[in-house]
Image (cartoon, rainbow, N blue to C red; front, side):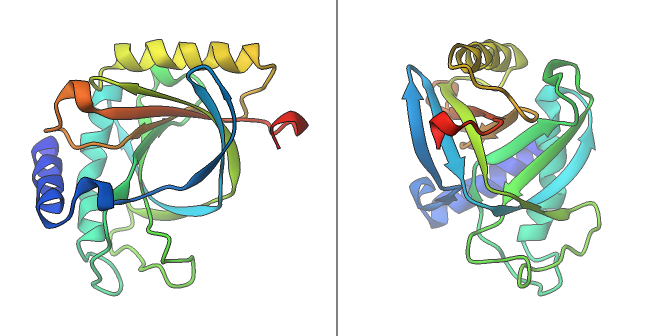
Length: 200
C-alpha cells in the first residue's frame, strides 16, 4: 500500500519537474580512496518518523506521514518541495538486526528551525542535524538487505583501512523512486566519523 503511494507521488513529481531538479543534500568531498568518499555535510533539518518492521519495509512504512507533511499537513498548510535522498537508519549500531528505524526526508534548505512548518501529526518530528563528517559509498541496484550488507561491509573495511573511526549509526540514502529500474538506482551508505585531523 505505502510503496504504491510512494511511487505515485514521485511519479507526479517527475511529471512536474525533472528528477535532477530536486534539491539534494549538499556536501564537500574532503578525501577519496577508491570507491569511498570522506564528506563534510553542513547542519540541516530532517523530517523524521520512527517505524517498526523489517529493513526492506521501513521506507514504505514511513513514507505516508512524511508525504502528508510535505503535502500540507502542517501548521502553515504549506506544500514543501520533495528533496533527495530519503534516509533510513536503525536505532543501534547493528543495522542488520534492527526492527525499529528512523526514516527521514531532508527539509529544503530555504527553511531554518524558526520558520519550518510544524507537522500536524506528532509522529513526524523536525530534527536539527549538526554538521558532520561521513564516509560514503555509492552503489547501484536493488534495495535488498543483501545488497546493502555487501556495500556496508565494503565501506566499513575502507574506513578501517584509512585508520578512521565510525561514530554513529550507518544511514542508507536512496535517491530514486521504486519505479526506477533497479540497475539505474543510485544508493549510498553514509557512516558518521569521529573527525580526525587528517580529513579536515
